[in-house]
Image (tube, rainbow, N blue to C red; front, side):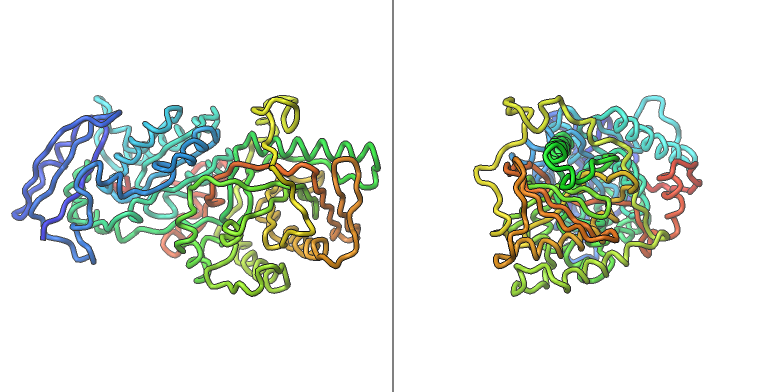
Amino acid sequence: MAGGTIAGHLGQANPACCNITTTTTTTTTTTYTHPTVQLVQLQVQGMEAGSGDAGGADCPTDTTQLLDRVDIPCLKHEATLGFLRTHGRLFILVRGPPGSGKNIVAAELEELYPDCRSYWSDKLFSSPVAPERSTVSIRESHDLCLNKIEGFMKNDVPVIINRNTNVMVWEISKFLVLASRYGYTVILVDMPHHFVLDPKVLTATNNKGLGESYITRRVRQWEEVHPFATGWSPRPRDAAKLLHRYRQLTKALHDEDPALAPKDVASSNVFPFCLARVCVFGRTTPESNYCSSEKVKKAYGRHDTVRVFGYATTRGFVFAMAELTEDQASLVKGHDDSGSDAGKVGEKEVDNLAQRMCLSLSPSNWEDISCIVDLAKFAASEKCGGGDDEEDSLRRAQDKTDLKGTLPSRITIMPLGSVDGTEYSFARAVGAPWTLLAEKLRSWTAPAAEEAAKKVGDVQVYADTESGGEACCLLVDDETVELDVVFTGYYQPHTTPLSRNTWSLTRNFGRGRPRGRRSYDRDY
């Protein structure tokens, strides 16, 4: 049975990928012009299909077919493209085995995002004075790639693209460390999700002349990279406007009634991320099924809008409070959750979240890398969050949120920072503080509950002044605002059964200590 695919790459074709010796394969080469780069199309004919379900017949045969099959919002969804171009801190990682078409997708992304910078490990070998491939030079190429990506992030490059192989979690974890440290939103483009990859075809189409045994091993090493949590990522400058608005409200409350005013944010070195579900890297079967569900995959990487109606403080953390639509709220629940308790935030949901958090707290299998970038730096001007200039203001919703008429299951949080004396951690913020706040919301939103709010200026104050760290304060703003976001994951470096032994190297890198040496063994 015949099968074929295409491998596009920058620059000239590597002769090694064209000189394939086999008695069953005939290779022809056709050169044509891509919008930004010249791609080389390798049409492999007469090759026997692999042992997979679809074999080589599932592979696209030219650039157009490949891009048609890679159906991801950051490539094709106009609203998403428009939002991501203005996001400001976006890191797109295109990953897959050699020969799977990463170069083609990355080239298309570079065309769509003109302000981007792109770098990948193999770029070291594309120059006229490239070194010979060896264990040492390959290791150096990976170190150079990490340094380049970190340099882009330090210089606030708005869109960064990487197309390393990254088939295993340990390989991509080093990039996740950088994204977490510098507050970049991660979107993964996984090539194996779009078509079956046949090692025989990949052997012919990869541009490094890699053998079939190596390609087969790399295909078998493929690991899904699930996040610590799913949710919605806003533009950093919009999140900074929310922080500014919180400070405006607390100052006004302090002037009116100091006893009601919550504490100000002392540390805003945070990655703004509006929580959908803590899924702890898909380590349990329900969480793995959730991450792989059609509902989550369809929403992943797509532009959306959430409504922010107020702010809350509890246990040393400050949150923006968001109201979700029915579709957005469905992304919070697992595929096996019953709809009968859709309006409740009860003991079962709190216990389930607590159980998932317990799975995540072992320092031996992951580490919550802290963001070192101050969210407040993205505030454009004193007009931030107010004023008459629409470009500098948050977009007001046509109708404001009525807390009494809102189901608690439609409310979620976005951490904005921590108060004096509390070290910020996203994992800690969405653990006990959120479960405590969820319990308070159940009483504050109950229709039959006594009026708990006190109106002060532009804000309704719901305060629970219990002692022992159980105090909660909710500020419902008179202005509900709409926040443009993209649905993605809160990614952190972690271990898996296959990537367990390399975690110490990533931890050292995350803490700024010299990395241990590991032979990449041609893991491009």
